[in-house]
Length: 202
Image 1 (cartoon, one colour):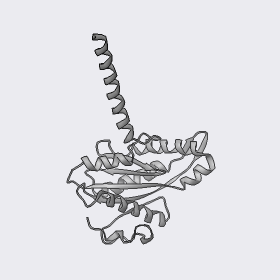
Image 2 (image 1 turned 60 degrees about the vertical axis):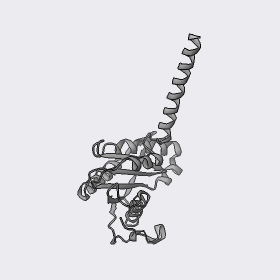
Image 3 (image 1 turned 120 degrees about the vertical axis):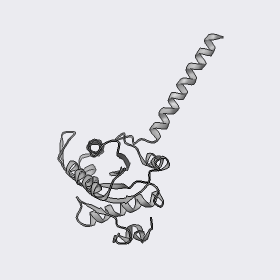
C-alpha cells in the first residue's frame, strides 16, 4: 500500500512539473527563448504601473532576403543573435522583451521618458547593425523602430502596440535603419496600413 501511494505521489509530482513546463513554453518563443505574443498579453494583464513607459516595435529590414539567400537555419541563428544583443539594451529590471513572430520584436521600457526611449532606440540601432558571423556567413542587417510613449493604463493595449507598429512602418518609409516616434494627433501614419489610427485617443 505504501509503495502504491509513493508511486502515485511521484506520478502526480511529475504531472505538475510537466504542466508547469508546458505553461512556461506557451509564453516563450521556440527560436529565441524570449517571451512571445502570449507572453506580451500576459504582461499587460499583470503590469499596472501609472508611470510612463515606452513601446518599441522593431522590424529587421530585408530579413526575408537573408532567409532566401542563406536558408532558414541561418535566419533562425540570426534571430537568436539579435535577441542576445537586444538583451544588452537597458537593465533587465526596466526592460521587457518579446518576439511576436517572423522578424518582429517588441521592447517595453518601464519608467521611461521620451529622451530615454530615443536613447534606447539609438543603442538598438548601434548594436543590431554591427556585423554578424552566423553559421559561417558574414551578415549585415538594419532595423526600423517605432516608438509609442504611454502608460500601462492607456487605452487598449492592442491599439498601443499597433500604433508603435505603424510608427515603425513610417521609419521604413523614411529610409529604414532609423526610428519614428508616434505623436498623438500629429503623427502622419500610413492609412493603407491602419486606416486613421493616428486619431486613436489614449
